[in-house]
Length: 306
Image (cartoon, rainbow, N blue to C red; front, side):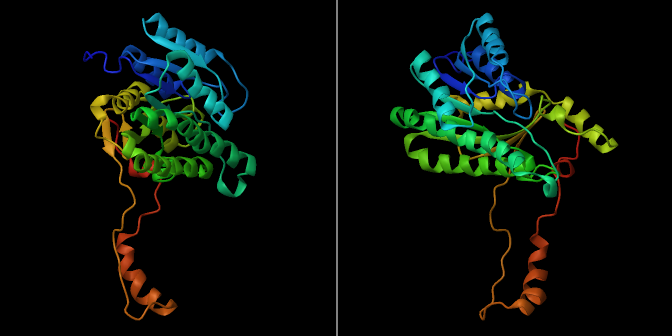
């Protein structure tokens, strides 16, 4: 395997590959020798409609550059669609080595106004979709004792954001799903990792840009490219990352950050147990030093990208 073809002979499914990070990842994998299933339903940013064009265009770009790719337009949001996506890889290329769970939609709404449909649609695509596609791939990975998952999470879930309870819940759930896959399938040499990407994309373009702070945030996002995220995704699928599993990496321009995962940071005990008075007078004052501030992602990542 040459250094410029690190994915030669591997078959990878990329969901949501018609635009943005998914597109950049599919193109890079194709240039690195992978056989790529370019999946994209072709829906709008909020999940309505369907269009075969984006998936076919990206698959065509890979082939035009000398690579190998097929388009797939099934939905990740149902078990049947997910199975069809994975079966496309098996039917067309005879095997499967990697999955990139990237498909997503946004239905932003302040929490007290969010309706059930807005909640469910986002959960269905992001969290259930990542499960359905991962589950469909799992038997093939298990049988060959080899495989790698890359899931897209978000600092909206890992840290927090306004108006995204549905998206944040789904994205934090994906981080837990990835860790569970990494634990359950380690015995079969199957790896699972998450990326929290910062990059300009079609979905980011739907975020509000009314206040000066929002405009500055979008300007920072525009300076960060999908290709920078794609490079990390492709690496995590490669044999060079064979010892990396169960991790969450944030990719912010040319920065790569390891995100913390929940662990105990402070404790206090009482030999006689706790009541409301002792909790208020002793426990909370001792523990508050370790509380996590109520911050949003832009407030934590408040420096310009490199």
